[in-house]
Length: 289
Length: 306
Image (cartoon, rainbow over all chains, first blue to last red):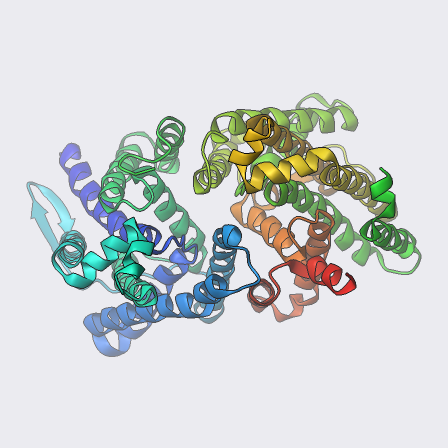
């Protein structure tokens, strides 16, 4: 009974972690950007969904949250990342640290703005579906099942997009050899815009679902970034499959610890796993060097 | 040493220090307290800049080293009551030991992976403080029986002196042959190795020096504040501030980091009447500064002169 409960809860939370992390890893793989405002973007989409759910219903709110996630992703790219990438005053080997610092500051700005307008107390987005379903004797909120289904739908669509469409193949090529791609006549800037758009959709969806499943507060933004970051590192920077694997490892480790040992130690085993993997296999579970 | 005496930056720094030294005659205890904090913070940022600006390694966990120094000193003092200097040295030694433990395996990694390992170290240390709450005071913080001094002015001079000495050592180091080798290792490790320098050894040395000063500053800060809590010495937000201070002041200048720290702390305090929005404005200004003048405050000043 407890085993089944861990299995179900762990599956849903891991799917959500996976969705939250693949946008982050895709962005790094294709454009080499580690977006430390990630948590802030998730936060904005959750808070917008929460605010608007009262006026336009749960579905309207969720759609608005998704749009807000996309808008924030574009704002991050156009206001912070692209000016740094194009700045002639920053030597190219230091672009990375400037992007990191810039997105970090941007994330703090987002977090503070959200705190100013909606306070730091936690908000829970109204679930898309109310009610409880009994799965093999375990009472599970229907919304939890919907979360897992939606996460996997989004992941499946991403897989189709990357592997079955022309634009997706260009993305894949950009992650392998950007210079070769420009030689073939592709505009890298367009590919970057595309990857930020995909990232926006993924982050927006993840933010809304997270807000409905666990609830968010403006103080969580940093923690959200950190957990997406650790999952991505565990799986291997830039590897989508690795991130999914890592999301499941972390999700189940946390759920098992919370149920069987103590909820207060929830994150310790996954951090230890992360340290061990980073020491023994620095490229992550499925990463390339 | 002769190069040091001839550099304009050195004399400018001496001038600033002289002004800082006569400050207690004219300003209130509140301002002194603020500056005392800013000086310790300046040491964190300078130690970080040695590692980033010169060795080219991004350490996302400056607060891992600071926190080890702070908690090492604080716990020793509250458990055994040993005198402050012993505790401070113990804290610094602990920071160096922890730094070595972190750096030896981590320096085999390159680029973002090194940064990630240091980030994880901070998260782990924070968890450890919570898990061993019996000794560390947990989230609420550790109260320390001894303090450096109860006089604002004495505390101010201790912090100023400490920052001046740390700044001198770090700045001198960065202008020495070792600093040049470090810079070479950071910019092109393959070539540096081809020239016969042991890259790993030099980076490790830089990490130890950085850890030493971070740990010392952390330990002194604890005895100035009289408490240690994860929110003031370990939290990632504190580490982020250290990084912002160093980049804002001008990376690869050492002294710029201290300027950035002072600007950041004073700006945060001046904007305090705005309440919650103050952090927003400080971050926005720092972001604009990074976008518009990436070489930092000191970098811009130096370029105008030359």
